[in-house]
Image (cartoon, rainbow, N blue to C red; front, side, top):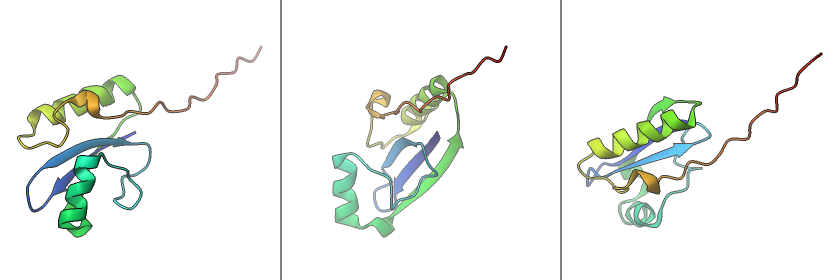
Length: 96
């Protein structure tokens, strides 16, 4: 999972998000408050920063909480607002 920050160049507001794929403005979905600003300011006034790639759900939750707490102007003030979808796990097979 990728943890990323979407930054509005005009306001400095930040959206912290999680994506299963390499974050790209064309394929990511955002909450309504972020979509409104994208429509108002235009997609060209937003910049995406890839923070890290993690494969541990707990580490992702901790990283998101840390990033949200450090931002002064954040779209998602509550880290629990960030949707972290479960990744399909590969079943383990035991050979005898």
